[in-house]
Length: 218
Image (cartoon, rainbow, N blue to C red):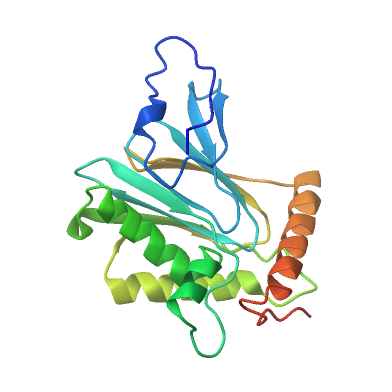
């Protein structure tokens, strides 16, 4: 699959040919404020890069882990809505079908993609964001996501360099994969309502997904 064409200013330093296999489909655009290409990560997505570009996402109750190899300048971000499936895990085909929508799959896929690109597990560092209580009339999915990601990182003995978790507001996260630098901004006002509605719709789609069928909405 070819990488979508992006009109770049001269000297931007971005090479479409260096996009890692499997990530060609993600949306890319030029961010004039940061003067770099930005890749937008949506719920259920993850992305890994070895280029000087920015990865961006917006989080409500979802959590994103930003993981990078501090020595080899390889990093990536995931974005998951639910911590892990309920009940017994299914076949390998089911795991593939779940993509990165569940935290346990999202973490494993992100780490494995970084290692496949040349990263070393001993040099990985992590920054985690999100888990806000933005769905006030529903289960506190945010707190479940926070508990999961903390438990996972501790079990895997991965170094956590920064975290911004919980609270009641959505977040806009910007991550620079080659340096590990991250920026976080809380979103208030109308942005809250738009994001909450988007998360509710996403949860409904997950609940109707025959691969899972285990999303509790109340």
